[in-house]
Length: 98
Image (cartoon, rainbow, N blue to C red; front, side, top):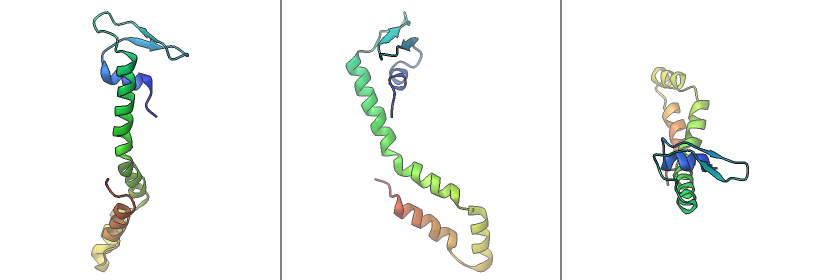
């Protein structure tokens, strides 16, 4: 879940601000103007959509990390098999790019 801090930091990367517990913003930056709540909300939506669009990649990475890929490639080379290639293809098929 994208936070207000992430959205404001995306809109104004070098700004100084604080978020109160009630989610009100205290703007400390005298050089940059404070973004409106509508701009911040729109940035939250944009950042969340960008994050969600890469879910397939995060799921693939988690599965790739479970494979002992170096050993699989070596065994495939020695045994003339395609276990590693088949494993990667199965992960990509299970988690396709949108």
